[in-house]
Image (tube, rainbow, N blue to C red; front, side, top):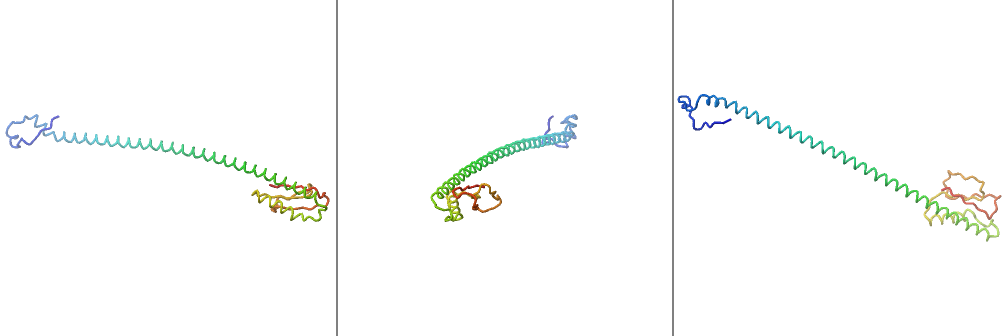
Length: 189
């Protein structure tokens, strides 16, 4: 459709003379409707564009949200795997440390047993020995040198049952029926 320029046309001329034919005049009069229609189409086009823009924004936000959820799940999964590895590694270290401490404790017990057995052979009578002081000193020194903490009980009779609830590091139990050159060391580690 054609839009007309009204600058060169004077109103009184239009009314008196037939410069513009009637059908053209009807079209000019109805051009108001044309403008409304053009505005309506423009508004509809703008509304469609806005809706499309909103749809695109919503769709892009949904895609971003899905990606974020997947990324967070991946991070959680990776963190869980790392934590499990660290826990398993820590458990292995604790087991290794306990095994080393057990070997050191057994070595300490063997050394104490040998040194006390050798000391008993060289003595005339065991009545001169202050067993509490001697054994306490030997065990305390060996433990402190190796930085080991444990509950140790020393007895001369293997049939004596030791109380596991006692917190003393060393307890010497004298039993007159046991030969003096035999000492049994029990570790309650």
